[in-house]
Amino acid sequence: MFRDFKKFLREFNVVSLAVGFVMGTASAALVNSMVKDVLMPIAAPLMGAESWREAAWNIGPVHIAIGSFAAELLNFLILALIIFIIAKKLLKLEAETKK
Image 1 (cartoon, helix red, strand yellow):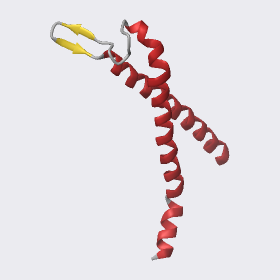
Image 2 (cartoon, rainbow, N blue to C red; image 1 turned 180 degrees about the vertical axis):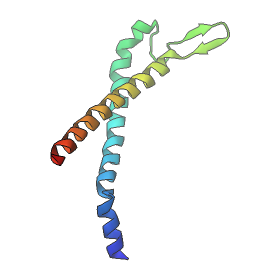
Image 3 (cartoon, rainbow, N blue to C red; image 1 turned 90 degrees about the vertical axis):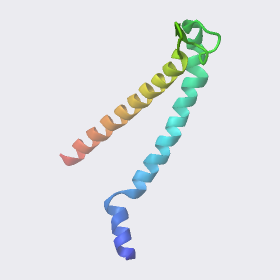
Image 4 (cartoon, one colour; image 1 turned 90 degrees about the horizontal axis):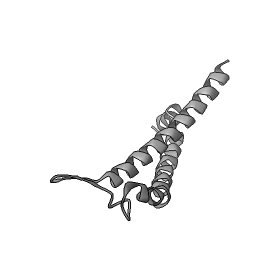
């Protein structure tokens, strides 16, 4: 049973997956902090509000919180860019090792 477990760990790169998950979680927290604590306070005056959290459009009775949405959108775009760059590098390395 122990041999099967070791084989499973090696075959599916479980340790690498776990390390990637932990690094991804830490990176997401770092990007989230950068967006909410650095970038969004700079963008708040452009949104016409004292705080980016308060930036909103009011269309009649509808209240659209554009500040929160903008922060989450920026957070997503930065993380997507990071993942894209890493994936592109990994695919390039993989293609070079197959040659």
